[in-house]
Length: 112
Image (cartoon, rainbow, N blue to C red):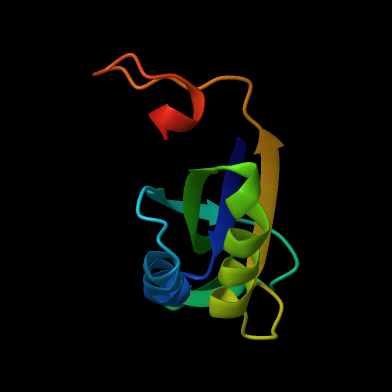
């Protein structure tokens, strides 16, 4: 089992969600986040003063997947979130030691 964290542009969230649903991946957690990376900062005006906002809005998608589904899910996210410009995001993958479903006490793959 793997814990996949994807950081994508906000306007790409629906594309990623729809693609993952097509792939049969329904369980995910989505969080609005802000980050700083390669993408240039936004320059904004407030009361006549210009300032730079270094933290860009992004969406964080977290999914627990089996080893068999991992490559397919990663490729689906890349294809549906990619614009080809800086700031498209990142995907991080970590191994899950164990998973439990609280309601039924199921363990590992049965829990996800």
